[in-house]
Amino acid sequence: MPLATDPTKSRAVIAVCVVLAAVFVADWVTGFGLAPSFALVPQELVLAIETLARAPGTLEAWLTLGTALTTVLVHADLMHLAFNLGYFWLFGTLLSQVAGDRWVLVALVVCSITSAAAFVVHRVEGPPTYVVGASGAISGVAGLYVLLAFRWDIPWAMAWPLARPVPPLHAALVALVAAALDVIALREGSDGVARDAHLGGFAGGLLLGAVLCSVYPTWERFRASRAGRGAAGP
Image 1 (cartoon, rainbow, N blue to C red):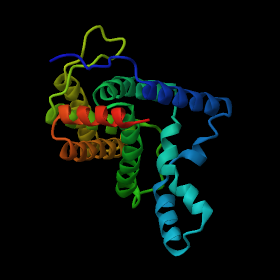
Image 2: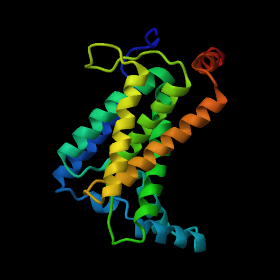
Image 3: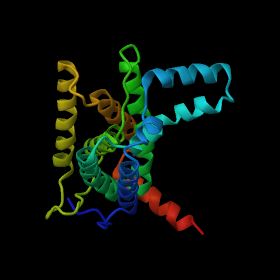
């Protein structure tokens, strides 16, 4: 299969990595003081939803609801951040070359929400806990790539520093193995990692891919639609 037509590095992936690294530095400088405001706490999120149902103008409840997105910005430690950046660099770059930067960003936002939803549903009846990190959202980026790899005949893509183009199904296998390990770990009990958030994000990516493929049954039609929008632009 030929290489993706634009093998350059994704500006969206680079920007997201820079933002996550910058927030980590700011958090470290402040003695990791951002987590209390940015982290997602299931019980607090459910309470915020109930509050907004009664009083939609409650600012504090809206801010709590926003932790479904802000939680992706903070990380527990340097190793947590480094692993997430590496995984995102791989699948974000591959997805960008196949579907474009816009879909990388859409996947991050949508899968942040599905990841948060899975975490809340699974943990809200348990003891108070919280989650930080972009792992769930990034799992969604991988999930979207997996769905496209199986549904579309997509080209091989490059991800620096890998020396060779990556066959789509090989990359998809990596993501599927990671998801399977999350399932196994979740069934065996808590290991301190938000496996439910990972799986919620991954499922969100699969769902997003299913929607995309229902609109564009082939990669060629998707690429033609992007070319048409570009030609019609100012």
